[in-house]
Image 1 (cartoon, rainbow, N blue to C red):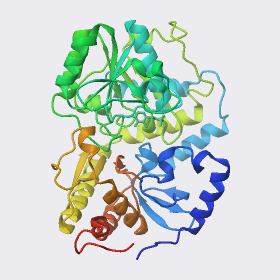
Image 2 (image 1 turned 60 degrees about the horizontal axis):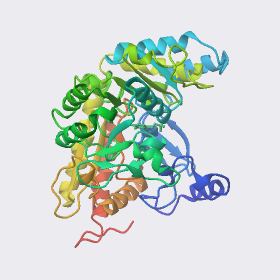
Image 3 (image 1 turned 90 degrees about the vertical axis):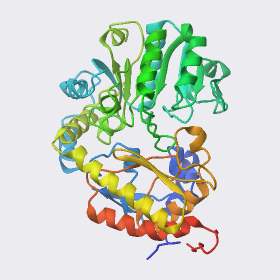
Image 4 (image 1 turned 180 degrees about the vertical axis):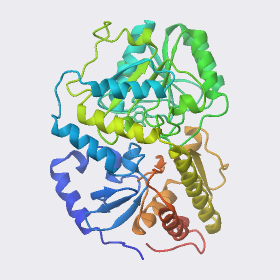
Length: 446
Ligand SMILES: *Cc1c(COP(=O)(O)O)cnc(C)c1O
């Protein structure tokens, strides 16, 4: 049973939105540009399921792009945030909830001794870069192609292909000046990092990395890559920043730094720590954080930072995650999802590979003749995005909501159960034939 052509209310909602919202959305990927068609407008979510404005139900693997590790509207989180809201939504003055969430985070992440809350991942990264530059007294930031760290100017920078390239603005409106102090390196290539720092190490403020890349699709760090970055940064006196906005409390309760046993100087967080509300944070070694205003001179502030409702949602989410067995259950469900996607591809004769770390994973459709691995942006950029788009539409029509783009992660939540997985497996077997598209004998009209 498919629903092709019956997204009438979503189509109307999108037409209306486009008249007053830029592009009809408040974040570009929501507009379905990468997969075609009209974005689905949602009415509500509960657990693993979403219901759209046309009353279709979906098994959701987007999870609001990562925050919803407990699924939609978990009862205890909602209860706690409603109590907080009834007591006043914002004071612009300290509350103990901020300290409580900070304590939970500092206990979980070995590298975070002291931290500051902000309102988004972008803000966390932007503030961490300023701090790294202030602490080292140096200008240069090294980032990796395919890693996304939010939309601050200094990181909206593209590199060319090759070993290490000076950044050029990747968006109009970013000045040459803002991009000039960013150098772009290939992910999982320690030789390139060593060579770049050998040359420019004396001007290096920081190397920033997604310790498990999730924004070029999921790409795990190669064995030794993160430790290698740690060693190179220490050798040159540059700070190592782990952007754990996605991986924090996702790949393990203690984030990627715990999973891989590598200690960054600074860590940026977001997504899960806000329990579905807007929160970001940056933190790290006490001596570095001491430079942040008002203790130090590095200015950074926020009217709604540490908002009590958001803190309440974060606290309850981390408490529930800390419970026994959550990550084991996520691992079981996620490995079973990965296996069923790979099996569906294999049976349909579609060249695809799943990259996975814990409950974040990506099914890459491989272009003909490409090796069956994706280890950096070079590899990822060759994926068959048209096949992904066909697969996405076919899954959508069968009640499975996947990320609307090849270069995104699927997220499994603690609310996904056997029934969700069985439904997904059945849909994937059919959708793979659509993904195969016009290859001989493979065409299935949607
Ligand atoms: C989502 C994300 C960001 C940006 O967070 P926003 O809250 O969207 O600003 C930064 N870094 C990483 C690794 C992310 O996944």
